[in-house]
Image (spheres, rainbow, N blue to C red):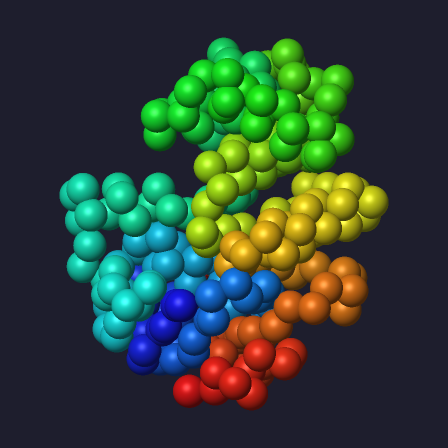
Length: 228
Ligand SMILES: Nc1ncnc2c1ncn2[C@@H]1O[C@H](COP(=O)(O)OP(=O)(O)OP(=O)(O)O)[C@@H](O)[C@H]1O
Ligand SMILES: [Mg+2]
């Protein structure tokens, strides 16, 4: 379970990232963060994988306050996450398949197994023809899907995705969201920040609405059980 308790983030000197956020996310939830540009969606996700430190308040994940984690504790925590961010940071001299399987290799998974997981995910994301391609030769949307496969290859407990459909055409965007929904059905908690309202109605996730760093509304059913 994730709990934000009165969390604020101020970027020095005085830019508000998020302001006084209190909410919780149950294990296994499928949650969308929505809101206009500057609402604080990316900041919220970055606080959650500790790319940013909260200025005030506590972020608690599985009973542990992560606001002050560092060193090995932080590395171990991040291993449980799958991150899909907009700057994909794919390794340009490695193929799509290698980019994905490497993420499993480094956690100690046997080479054959990590390759077969990578094959399967890339195929599910419509990249069967691109296993051997190098990132600079892939379109933005294709690179994004490779990054998504890489985030999922270690069966993370928690997936955080920032505008994962941003570079995709409508068909591929929906396909990608379906893949996230499938991951969610397998028990993974999934948080997706998006401007993209087009598909939300088709997925039964809860939606947190944000504006100017604050939570402005919640739609969906789990809220009743978990309202702060
Ligand atoms: N590194 C930073 N330094 C200073 N201010 C920042 C920084 N990152 C974000 N902000 C500010 O924090 C606020 C929230 O930004 P954030 O990127 O979290 O919004 P967002 O909802 O992700 O927007 P978008 O939809 O455009 O991605 C904005 O006012 C932004 O200017
Ligand atoms: Mg953002």
